[in-house]
Amino acid sequence: MIKILFVCHGNICRSPMAEFCMKDLIKKMGIADCFEIASAATSTEEIGNPVYPPARKTLREHDIDCTGKTARQMTKADYEYYDYIIAMDRFNLKNMKRFVGDDIDNKVSLLMSHTARPGDVADPWYTGDFDKTWEDVLEGCKCILDELNAR
Image 1: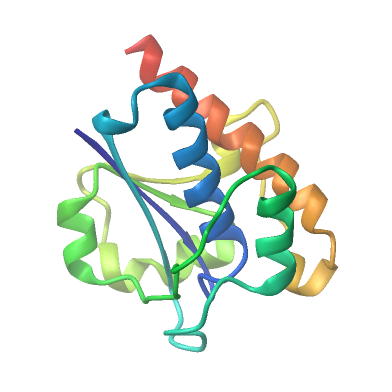
Image 2: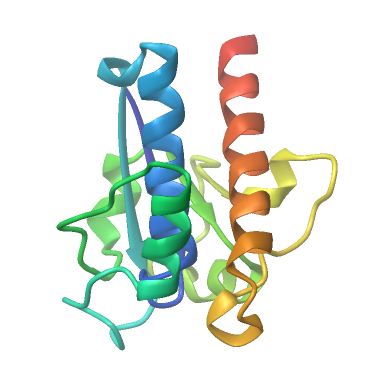
């Protein structure tokens, strides 16, 4: 089983969008039983809160349901448990250091580093552009699956 954790600042916009996008992709491919997908935050600001309404709306527009998801903070145990830990931006990558240390197992990466367009997934909390975030998340998730299939 391949275990992937997506991480952003609050775990109410980008990382749950990536979590549920990936779950949808692998379900449609018929390989959901080969994966465990989750998401978490680097901060404590949103712990226990549901996915942010505009992010839920964007997922719903793509027939993806995220009912029941609430924000949680990443833990040091997540580094041991997950095979891949995917950050949404460099700020969160930096904040993850306290949970992952020096990443000696090379599990941590930026989502967009798996695409032909490396960089950050812009935070729609600030940009208001949930469609652009969706496009980046979808592209990143598809590219991760392509990489895994190539192995």
